[in-house]
Length: 441
Image: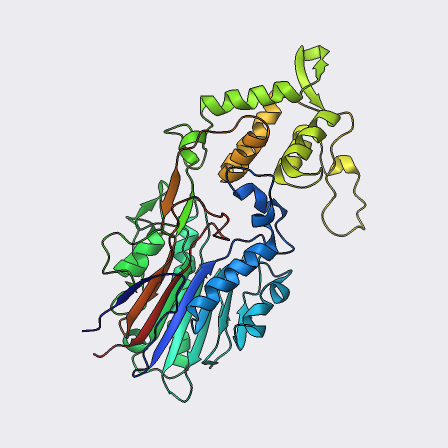
């Protein structure tokens, strides 16, 4: 029986020198990289005038220190930006010795995989938000399959199941192509990443139970129309299977209980009365004009610009700006777009438009439906209506699974007692790492 070491990072992840082994680190690094993601400062609570901790150079150094300390053979990242990937993570090859890399081929939030001390044995396979790589260590004939996942967030249970089903099927297809004998039982498979759901969600149950069927309900609806089975025998095993309460990987400010009316639908959340009152007070402070025909106070374009600069630093960026423009009467046709022009129409605030209290509320209701709890909390705070401290929300979205053909020898988690990101943690997610050997069966 293999004894599994449980470690708290950052630390060197020990690997076997006697048996064929592979070590993996998975880490959602938080999208705002050096180029894409101006809004990063909004994710730090409470708001601060010191943005040092938010900038990419500071966060990049923390990421590098953690990845270097663990020194895994394979590093699976999520939420990297294709716009600056090569520059942002040049340290992986130039300083940490990783000899290969693969970034997912589409999307704004992309998974990426790095490796060293092993070689790629087949071209990487790109499915819907999963990235499959297959490796061989040194002169060994044993092949390892690593599926890097960043499943869809939000009320998208059906899509998450489809994504993980497609990804795991791709593993078996590749293993058979590489002439694995009885691939369903013998393939050395590691499935890891950000699954955007907890223990009860369908994608996790699919991996651990081996199937989901039409009786499985998530977000109020069946996740499949017919039974879908995992193509491995037996199902995959969580590396923290020995722990009754595995450590959380998502540690953020508790905001939902402060923002969302209890009992409102997940798909159509509603603000609490307290938040509605806060929004009305903010509106009253910014609305300097009176609309005579409706006998109501409104925000004219100058008022809206002052508000946008307060929350976003400038006019012209952010979903608040785009929705405010629509509420003020902006439409694409109103701009008279040249049919020969390419790219999206530039959104502007209508010069003679105005934003009503109802429209102002709608801007933030749109943010709420988009799950931007952190952005709403930031805006309320800088606009003079900070929410009370309700502690932290913890969950385990980031996981590592192994097939029955391999056995974990060491697993590592990271800890934070306060909301992330912060001075010491560069992401809202904490990394997870594990070392495996071939199982003695």
